[in-house]
Amino acid sequence: METYEFSYSFELGALFIAPVHVRIERLPPIIAAHQHSNISYEIHYTQSGRGDVTIDALTRRVEPDTLYITGPGVTHAQRSDPSDPITEYCLYLNCEALNAAPPSPFDRFVATHFWMGRDEGRIHPLLEALIGECRGPGPGAREMTRALLMQIIIQLARMYSQDDASLRASAPAPIPALTRAGFMPIIEDAFFYRYQTLTLQDLASLLNMSVRQTQRLLIKNFGKTFSQKLTEARMASACQLLADTRLSITEISERLGYSSIEHFSSAFRRFMGCPPRQYRNGKRGK
Image (cartoon, rainbow, N blue to C red):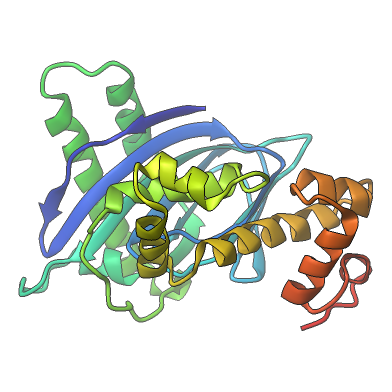
């Protein structure tokens, strides 16, 4: 995996944009269902490989040249075919509409929380150029990467406008200021990669904040406490792992970081409304 972080922000029309990072990686077999913060957008482009993406409980096929964008409130999970794993570009940024700014043609980007379709040579070359610039930055690197980021957003706004038949948009929710937006990737990566052992104190240390400040930050940006976010991350992964019948319930419990199968089963039943084995057999609860 290659990841390149950005440390600046810029304006585009009526938008204030804080790019976080761009990466290219071969995906693991399963990425559990998750949401990003209420100001975050993620652009996914499949360079090679095949699999599925589940968006708000609806599963769609992913193959080379698939492009999809997820915004605030969009729950998404990915599955990569073991025999043909996905390699994807992923651009993650925070974005909000400026107060008192006149409307602009780029508002369509921030207002669109989900879109999926074929790229057909529109975004991929820009992502490739962005990664290339980050790998070997030369004079004017910041200006060049900013120009590429602007082109990506402009191109997406055009695609949304031209392809209303494929648009999956929801009315934009009120978006708070980008206060502490730089902490969002740290928080999301912690829940995504470290949910087995993560504690509130661990997260506070990663953020260089107090436990109380960290809890407030989670509630402000995700509307959930640390415990709720941790349970959500573990249960999303549990649902993915239960689909693999080669794994026993005990093995899944251990992978998720539970001290016993009883503890896992009890937590799963409270969250999903049925025991893990019943869920695996297709007899769902809630």
